[in-house]
Length: 210
Length: 210
Image (cartoon, rainbow over all chains, first blue to last red):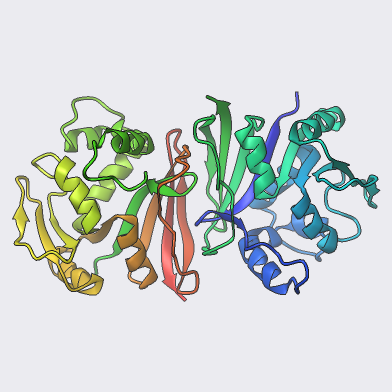
């Protein structure tokens, strides 16, 4: 049975993204802060190859973890805002290479990208998206890709089995908090593993319903 | 030269204490949430012995880290609110056994406790308290004991050399955030070590001024 998980990078002060991107403004400021947060990712060979950023990159433990996360993912689910931001910034060959379900009020036909990513737009809620994702997961796992609001909806509904947080050694000071609004009475956590790296700390948890 | 450090337990959603204790109300609710956060500490032999909570307790890595933190500390500095809460709840033999400087507007004579803890009340700011602490550190390190506000003042002033966070696998949902108001432009961090334990994850950082 497919597991439902999320995997994000978080600043030490709890943010997984800078303040909301203003879609009518230049993305440079937002991207600058986001790249500071995701700095370790940009140094990894697997990520550089996936996004066609050029040769080179680290090939150690952080790289292995990124690659494993990608390989276990049979399908992704994301919120509308994450999709809107990505639609403007992903390369034409979007970096998922699987079905992706987008939680949205917009009615829109599936959008196929070169390389195997197909975005499908779901209008009837998180449980419907998850049910549809299970059907196409192909024995792999289901990733709640983001953003924070979509992750929190699934987490608070008791629908997440496990998650990974890469804690970056930076402060953002402001932005989008991962756990703002988490319901402490619905779920409890077990630590699965913590992995030390000089660039980032990987925290892995299993989720139990209370 | 003595290092200046802090060492706290933080929930995964970023809180180091429940909502402010109301000093005119029963402490049971506050203490219940605080003990949930500090659960791993109460299971350690070193802590149980220090606070005279009875025999037994874990003697592994978490216990060793608590003991090392205690042993390196030659003097502590704390905010007035932490002192006020502690004054009501510490045993008569307060668990510091060193000089403790309390940042406060109150003018008060030193308060000696059995077992070697002496509280001294500093009215002229964090740098004065630190200068006084350096004089009595006796070759050991200086701990900013808390609360969050005192820690943040020292951190933002560039006066902290290193810190440890024990990330507890719980959500509090509300409370006192450790890094609320941290200034990302003043300091940067290097990861020193991350230590996995089934009960809590120890994150250690060195601080650099930018």
